[in-house]
Image 1 (spheres, rainbow, N blue to C red):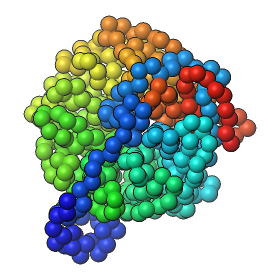
Image 2 (cartoon, rainbow, N blue to C red; image 1 turned 90 degrees about the horizontal axis):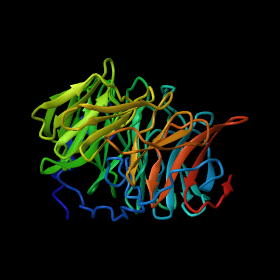
Image 3 (cartoon, helix red, strand yellow; image 1 turned 180 degrees about the vertical axis):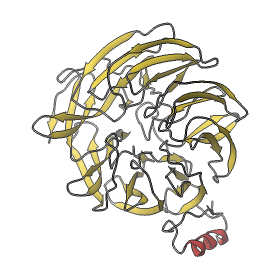
Length: 436
């Protein structure tokens, strides 16, 4: 279906060149080709950040709970450079972004799901890498795929670039979505909704949400946001009877219409800066942050009120809401469980040291990767902390594990003679392969 083109022409004339504005402008386009939603296998694929259901819940029925350097390892593959994005899986393809600060390059790599062999590598940017925090990288986004195209999101030359590649690594289009000005570098991930790839950029100035057409690469709508400097990814959830585009940060939780970027509601909550993705359970939304203070908050999905809040802080990680309870592991390594409706603490347990990755739920168990390479597997049990396993693999982990098709894909760094990232597939039965 096509809609009229007049408003698109106005947007182009007002900007000079769409996506290349020196200042963020609102865009609302009446013309675009409506595309069918991605047709993926929810049990076997993980097409974007936080998995098929966008909330960290995997449909895998029997993923491994135990592994080591040699146990339940299907394959390992070296990943050049440095990145914190999780693996994205579609069919026989596994995608990751990476950045090489020495070569000043930002690239996309695709690996074979069956044996870990590198299918292709495509360099997208060759200079002007941003300065980032030590807990960030120049390739921190998790890619999104729609079955025909793989979408990569990079900050480069103070601009936010969204690029579409086909499954052979050929660039189809590249769009400058808008300017980026952050203190610690860009870190959020693209999200697919119907015909669009939706991205957020809550920079220190000129913050915005934008929807880019999956096929053409043109900006369909762009909405200004308050500019306080935040890092949370957007997410679409079906709550309160409709699809809502949800985003935290800038001292609020806000809801937008994902079809056109218009405001639904906003409610004062949290601190200026958040990093985690909003999660939901029934008609309740949850998030945590931030800077300069600390807060975990529950709000109604219509934005009418704050239901409860506390002074807890799950800053860089996303929480997980499941069966009436809210689970989290904060950056201090403390796991906790709260009653979703009341906020009452059910239990807490110290796991270890620094934490950056988010929780994933699979087959009734929660998986959490610590920064030192240990992955804790514990039951999603509100009654007590019950550890199923603790698995050591590598020396450094920032990326959240991807669990799909009863396989676990992890991005791990080894500190041997030099730092080397590896993409590892954990699976039953084990068949060890090492790919350079």
